[in-house]
Length: 240
View 1: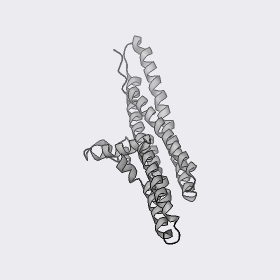
View 2 (view 1 turned 180 degrees about the horizontal axis):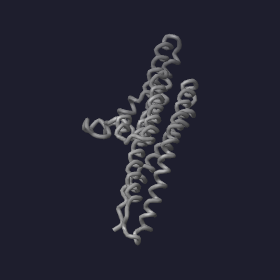
View 3 (view 1 turned 180 degrees about the vertical axis):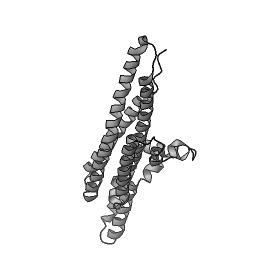
View 4 (view 1 turned 90 degrees about the vertical axis):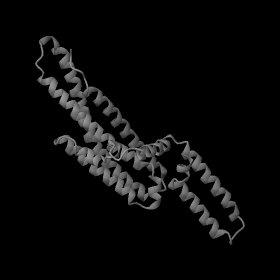
């Protein structure tokens, strides 16, 4: 964790800038010697804070976990490829449209200047997580829709009708919630793309980057919660 924090781009940039200023001002003034310990102290503080940051810890641990998986593991499959496994229809079209915007947001960060990329270093894994969870929600939605179709076509005896109707109504509510979230995710990703552009113009304003990451955290939380709810609803057992 300390090694990852020490090599974090933003921390390295601070160290390099401080060393560069020290080297250029060394001959000009004796006060330049004060800059060297100040740079080292700042760098050490950034490393310490990064190593204790829960989000950074999850990012590093998640990267090590992915690196240790088999090449055939589902976690190594891109969200775009997983989306192509969805049944053809409106849900798949919406997911593919959202993933297209997601790729453009990632590209906007990767194509920006060094300072912007350093500021948004923590945003890229959040974007990847959101794309994966969006596909999870869509897959769970399709499974729930399949179960709902089975319940609606079931012709069991009349005493089981009430329980069947309750299960069907619960599934339909979750399906509607998934549809709304999938559509909303595409719109939110479009807004995030605009935020990335604003950050690249005003990269010295950390509040904009914090706002972007907060939006991504909220999106990931909603998608993860909905995916879990949809999965549990999609596996509802039939009435005995």
